[in-house]
Amino acid sequence: MEARVTIFDDAASSAPNPAGHAALADHLDRTLPALLTQEYGAMAGTPGELLTMRFDAPDGSGAFIRTLFDHGAEDRVVAVWGVSRAEPAGTRDTSRMAGFLGGVWSDTYPGDDRGHFFAHTMGGGMDINLFPQDAHVNRGGLWRRMERYAAANPGTFCCIRPVYGAAGWRPTELDYAVFSLPPEPFGLWQARFPN
Image 1: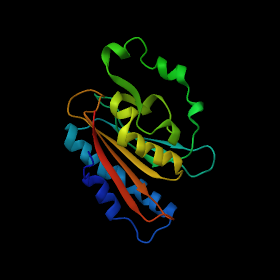
Image 2: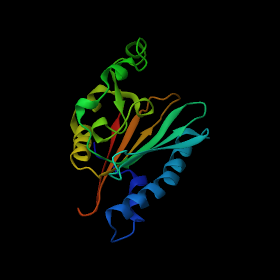
Image 3: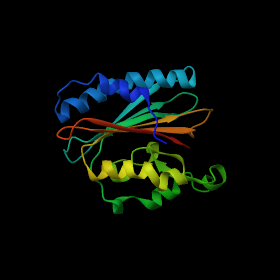
Image 4: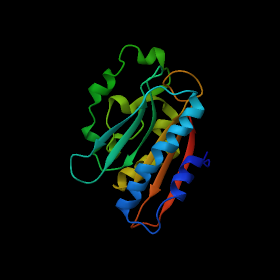
C-alpha cells in the first residue's frame, strides 16, 4: 500500500540541512502550499478560490494546523498539514460529530465514517476537518498506525492530501505523509490510501 508521493519528496528535498525542529516545520509550512496548489490544479482542472485557514494550538506548544480549502464550486478540502499535539480521545464532542450531516449521512455515504483529515488525538478539530472516509481505512491498518505515531509524538509534522477523481467532496484516494523532525533523524513516511 505504501506509494511514493512526489509532492512530499519535493518538499523534503528542499529542506534546510541540518535544521532544528522549528526551522524544518516552518520550511514545510512555507513550501507545501505552492506544491499542493499546483498538484490540485492539475487534478481538478481550474480550482475555485483557494483559502488557507490557520489554527494555532491555544496551549503555546507551537502546534498548528493549516487547511487549504477550495471555496469554489466544489467546496472541498485541498490539503491539511501541521504539527501534532497530544489531545485525549475523551475530549471529542461525539454528539456534535454525530450531528454532522445527521439524517442524510448514512444514506448518502453508506460504509463511510465521518473521518478526520487531521486526527482528533493529534489536535484536529471538527467541521472542515471532517470528510467521508472509508470505514476500513479509518479504523485500522497503516492509516491508524500513522495517526497513532503522530499523536504519541507531539511535534510531528503531518500532511494529508485528498485526491479527487470526480466532482464532489469525497476523495477517491488519500495521501498521508508523516515527517520525523529533529531531534529525531529526519525521515519521511508516506502512503496512498484508497477511499
